[in-house]
Length: 249
Length: 269
Image 1 (cartoon, each protein chain N blue to C red):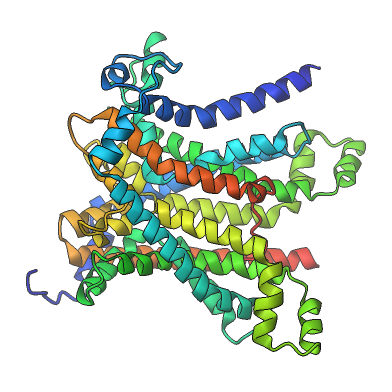
Image 2: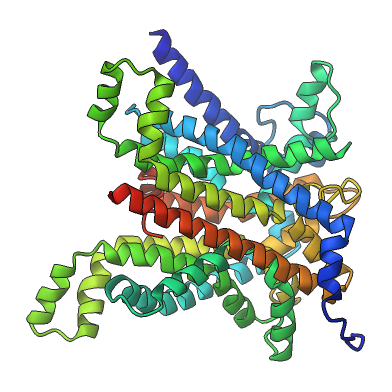
């Protein structure tokens, strides 16, 4: 290891001014936000479906939850076998209807593949977190709003959503943070490519520390990310406290 | 009638989407490479265990499975030993600063493991924990202690305080109350917590990239290294390794089935 040189706040200056790092942070935030936009409504819809009693619901839930437990590194391998052009059934089926799909073609195809992969793994988590809250809503409240002439969307907005506010905020927070730190499955599926276009911030840090031995920037970036996480956690705790207060009143 | 048919259809579509990739990796792991690259049909075509034999016995990948078992189990024991008393105190006595402790746990759980890579690498290297089981067991506590504190605090809070008070009045010492009354009643929650802690340790990848040595490589890291080959991926072996990594997870998930069916409740964070 080379002798360390004291550079003061140079590394932080570089983080704030480097276009590369802004790009990596940008796509990381984009992935986290798009994950929420897709997975929260989808998970909510599935939770609403599951809140009805039906035969075999327990078995359904157990099978539905299986992807949740799979190691992200294994998820990357599974998706590689499903969507790589040489071996995957998905590109083959798309080819039959005239679409040539190679997810490593451009940033957007790789990004879409990653988004699909995390949606596949984590939507069950969203659904199963919202489910107990939805089930615990007294049915007469929903019936009452129906009798008052509220449609489904109105019931959802004015009755169901306010009653599941806290678990909803918790699951939004957890999903945002988990998407923000995504690493393993992307590492396998795209390796940060094509051409570093999917180098999310965790991938950037790992590459700097393990493969490029850029310890100074690596640790400055690590701390920078920790500040972001702490700030977001603080906001989250504040929101939850307010939510609990208004609920009590 | 139509409504019911749509309902069932929706359930079937959800299940097919969620299970198809898993199904595909399983049938791929039983195929030869020629079949995998040769546009094999969607139904199972062969049932050969050669791939598993080749990877886990011939290449001795069972060693990595054993390493993962040792680290995940050791980590679970360490985490439960440390967090059971912590959670008990957090659930029962409002100690000063407990809110800060919970907040610290929250941020630690949410921070990317990548952000801890360098300090852990340097520190563990200095004290000789790099490449040892103990190093991995301690490092994985970083994200598992917060998780365990959350879940155990909720599990212990659900034990009625009155039972403990009654036992105290009957002359049991506080420690006896904890071991003879509270822990047995909270046992289902503790078991679920332990299994989830185990699962997260088994599945972890990033810290293993720098902390495992030749003798302590974990199955996730072996899988990652193998699947990262830039050219000429041996798909059948990747599939077999992946299935080998997943099987223990599915067993654990079947054990905690009850918790899954009840849904996840985070009301007490």
